[in-house]
Length: 335
Image (cartoon, rainbow, N blue to C red; front, side, top):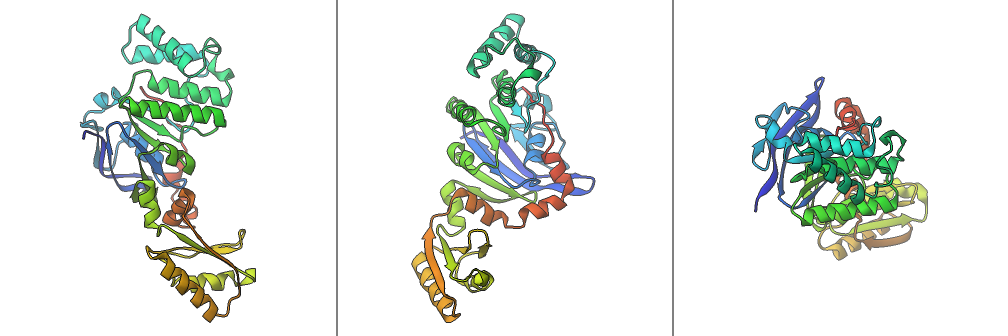
């Protein structure tokens, strides 16, 4: 199978602060890779290096066999990019934005006109096509931004949190578009903080935290990483939550997490969930902790994400100002 995106130990720092610390990826052609991670984890920095907007400090990356540093021009002809925020020219019309990009990608006047008309219709923007993009709603600007990234029919498409600000209908339509692109052979790298989106679209997932890949695989594989099942315990006295956490720390397959708002402590179970459950109940009884409720469930992708990245991931990322600042930057669309 052809590899569309390959990275080996990518590294990038800003003002001495590491943002990406050895990220390695391998994405088969025609697949959708979901990249998850908290704010400041290094997702956008990684995308910007892959799309030739940033030069790596170390490691290497290839798009369809072309090195992103030595063959940047060839890479740009193969990719499309939509950043975290709409980056179209707001002083000209939607149609003119699309026509301009078409000409920049090498289409003749007639071809660029036809492509602009096609993309306006494809993203339900035909009626607004003659108006300045600055007058579009947020959702319309987002759809135009994505349309711009597809003008050149890219073989590899980078979508950096593409549904931010979209209403549910527009989001579902974009999901359909991503599925259609993948079915037609386009490789998609999608960064997102919406677990539902990752589960709906991605063939495989990568979790990045503090600039490193900390987990990868399908949804089922990631759930298995946290034990497959999660044990939740609700004590009769909420004041005993810390003590419940201490007791459960030795009963599960991972770190016990306390949720004061929900009034419970949860811990991932090992493959033999029944034995761990029995051990937990006995340990709680031995500690003299009255329990109001005990249950097990299969973790959602949100819970998997929180378990893998840890409760303090956001705070830690905030300390890495270089990574966080650049992960929030607007990335220009490229054809």
